[in-house]
Length: 263
Ligand code: COA
Image 1: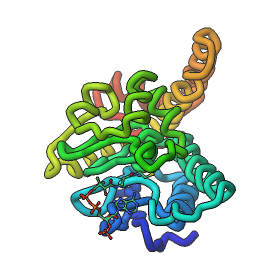
Image 2: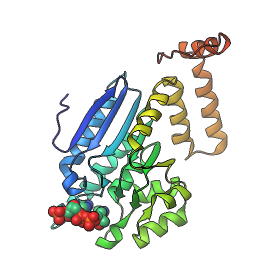
Image 3: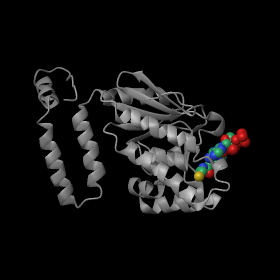
């Protein structure tokens, strides 16, 4: 599979850790249609890699994570082309969200429109103190199209999702942390190191249990509590079919660090 792209970088800074960088700094990493296609191919690489444990997403440069869909491609876009664009964006973010591994958005500046929507499809959002989040589509006479209205409402709450989508205002990292959009905020200088620290911690955990935790929360959110708890019990019991469960318990009893293999 081709891993050479024009608009993104896909790197493995350490075994088991992938870092995907949106790489159009002059356009504040805006998501052109070509960038979305490359993003989709990169997600396919990660989907098919059995050794990957964690994925980090970030933006090139010191100004932006992603400043949204590429507005220069909006002029003259037909209704059908706009629909295809929304569906392409939604497809890649659905697949990102369904990866079996923890996915961390490392927000190093503007995360607006499609950029905020990318972050919302990640499990973790960590941000630098200069980060700015928003869904400013209303200012262009349009609305979020990559799932942002729905994921923002589910991640934060409906009133804040309405506020951000209807006013199009930007919020800073402090407010993002206060409303529960971000998990942590760090200084710009330390963000990347903190992201790697988190990635390393997560990459040492039991991969199958990790996948189940992600699955039960993602799928359980739209189920009745009773059914979601039944799913939890099923997945809990399946953990006991893994050698990682034997290793985890043995390591605790032998007072040593567990070495998980994903089996
Ligand atoms: N699509 C295409 N190009 C974009 C872009 C986007 N979403 N966001 C920024 N750019 C481009 C600008 O056009 C500019 O290009 P230029 O140097 O060729 O003129 C360059 O990136 C730098 O942006 P600029 O606006 O000069 O930076 P700024 O610091 O003054 O403002 C923002 C930064 C993010 C506030 C501003 O760029 C902005 O509002 N961007 C659009 C955000 C948006 O509406 N996103 C949702 C799209 S659906």
